Length: 300
Image (tube, rainbow, N blue to C red; front, side, top):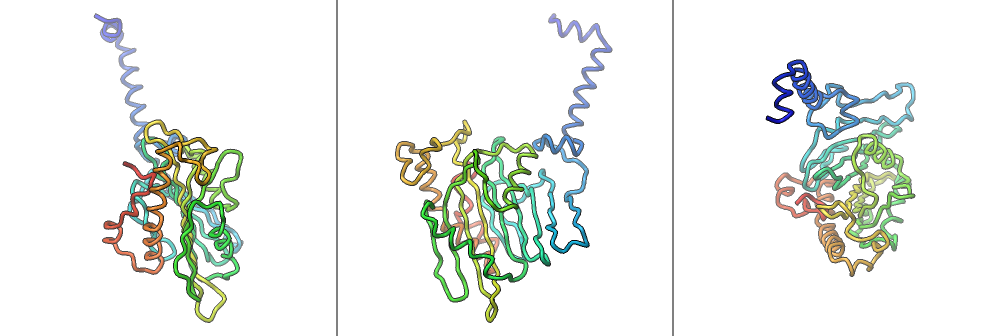
């Protein structure tokens, strides 16, 4: 007879305490408090707080309204924003932040994160116009598309009324601001607050589309940025050292080269779906039939 079995038989108070501890731990996991769920978002239960938190000032028209969805919920296939469909690559996507930007809530933004085996495998950030805004506010897209540091840049046929491009680039978290965009910075701060293990380096896929309103200086636009960590699925380590993620520096790292080859083949497929979603031509069947769901960091 082991010491544990002897103690189990001879100490009824200790036995009751042990059973109680196991039961209360299980209850805490499946019915966590809001604070516990924020500290440990991977727990299976959900707190019974409101799904969204917001406190906009009704007397301040220039205040951005920020919403914090429950990080335990997830969506598949697509999201809707500003009356348009945005396709999502494969996996469980957890909405973690959204915002409406003044004046008159002309812009909407949403951020989602995908996880696999306890590791972040993708982050998507979408910004779209609810109504046309001045075209002067979207000139930054043209500069980003022509950045010679991009791995690859694709341009859709340009017309007098529209412009579109997509490109692959890099984003480094260590000792660098991830982006000057305040919504993107707030997204990564929230990921850290929620306890998601955010990688230090990403390959980013960015798509942007702008359409001028006929007879007006204003435009409708949408940008979608996806952060893909080039990590080994088992070790969660980078497929190549940081110093080698410059153009044409991955030849000594076959898995990293394969990741980038996959990304370059995937980008035009994803851009095509995003364009169809912007133009209102995206159907559920299109989402099912396209290979755009299989980004290089997608769950296997």
